[in-house]
Amino acid sequence: MGAPRGRPRQFCAETALAAALQVFWKRGYEGASMAELTEAMGITKPSLYACFGNKESLFCKALDLYERDKLAYVRSALEAPTAKAVAERFLRGALALQSGASDPRGCFGVISAVACANFAESIRAEVMARRVSSDRAIIERFHRARTEGDFPESVTPEALAAYLSAVMQGMSVQAGSGASPQELEQLVQTTLALWPGR
Image 1 (cartoon, one colour):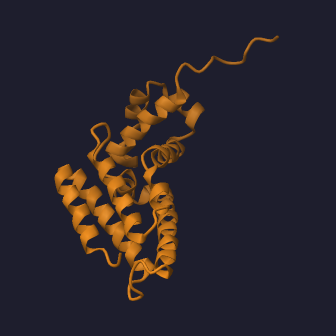
Image 2 (spheres, helix red, strand yellow; image 1 turned 90 degrees about the vertical axis):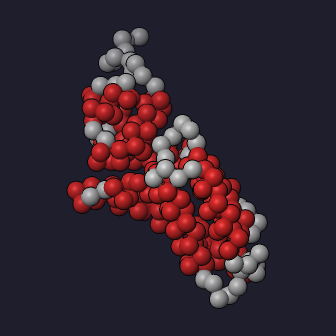
Image 3 (tube, rainbow, N blue to C red; image 1 turned 180 degrees about the horizontal axis):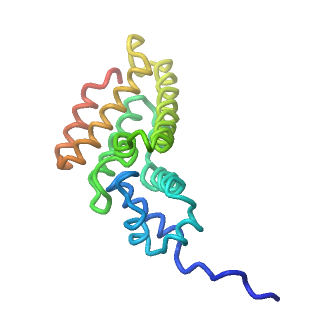
């Protein structure tokens, strides 16, 4: 048997990626320096490039991790029996995420979309594409809900999805600005109380 090529990797890629996610979540794409990323990840810059590619590629992998680990409630929400139950699962999932003690406040996707300037247009496009895909899934679910009589014909699925999205983004901004879990809970309860239909 020949000797193995190169040096074996001395770090856990999943742990390093989780650390990178935290930095991007706090700083945004542009605010996260390579020095800060490599320090948080516990690796050298060459190791980062070898394992994750460039900064843009690392950010996209961090987005994947965020969606997998932090937005697991989305699938359950879309499977709820009524449109109002869909909304409640989305809002409760967002509330739990915003109220957690271990992660930065605010939504990683919202922060990234707002913080990216023109020279990070590819990152902004990536974040927005993921948001469009998510919005489309909610709209499709609300179309089904309307045919099942969950809300009046006068309310369009597109408008209802946009409303839910706006509330969740507002929760993220308020959480990032220091709103307490109790204040966010009031927002959830008010939204559900005003929700059209059953």
